[in-house]
Length: 413
Image 1: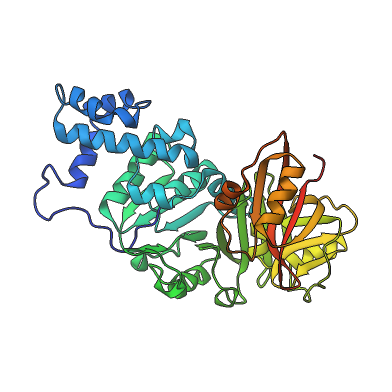
Image 2: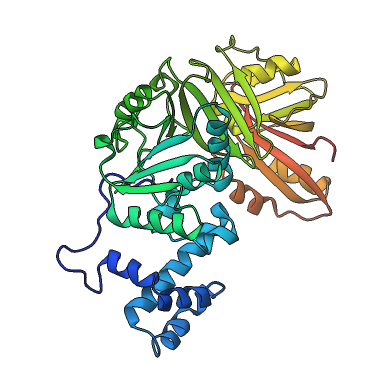
């Protein structure tokens, strides 16, 4: 989680000074630093200047700046780690940005734990230690490795803060030089961000996907975290590929290797229910036809795993367009892998027609969904000038290649 294995700067060379990130972090772990952080748990960022001015009367300015920065990071981390853990842990800006949500890390750790014989894992590119924490809480001993000294120190502090130091050994080293043979499994999370943002070429990961795959194949079991948009052709036949969503948002893809997994298969897992859809081989291209009474929106993990054809087969339906992942049928179909809508109207694309229909229906709350359309939802809502007590959902999409608007509502509403 929060991988910065490659080239994260650690501050100026030479003796630790007031701008040395390691020294600033060490100061946060002193009794004075801990007291400052405890007092900043619920501070209002909008009043940060006044807070800083007040605190600098009794504390060193550098320590106050470091504490305020850490307090901001903790507040951001609550969404991923929950308040109880986030306000005990330490973070770096990259660590918060790249960290895996706790629910996803826990799911992965429990999948490892369910395999007989996995008692130890080498966590390569461990970042701030979120995955190591999830593994340790599943009862697994962890070697957590990161190249960046500050990140490794933060991971070590987090293991101690959560009472897991006895299960997590943190090592600052280049992951390509680590001997993983003493461990039952390997987990690799390469850095997928660079100086210019997200990295889309798997061979530009740090370390590259080819190295990570080779490291995974050397272990009895392994998991390799990758971007959910990775091309399927880059996966290879020896991995089980799994896409994971949480609350409807796709969070990551994982390649699983070794005993207990199914090489060549594709899996979509939906959290928090852990419902899992698996296909051993791609199904034939699904049929395409007109929009029927019901429209199904597959979960993003299902789409990323290329399992929409499986949904079509299960519901006895068809696609509305061969390039769009909307499924339709005349009969209702209930599934954890889709959201179902009842369609009331189908219109050729046109703002005036949509505005007139919504005004006639007295729609004041409009949910806008789009696939295959360049229209921005917020701009559409602004132009509709919505008023009224009713709600509706509009789909901006294509049907048989033609720009189309579908209006309806979730089934059961």
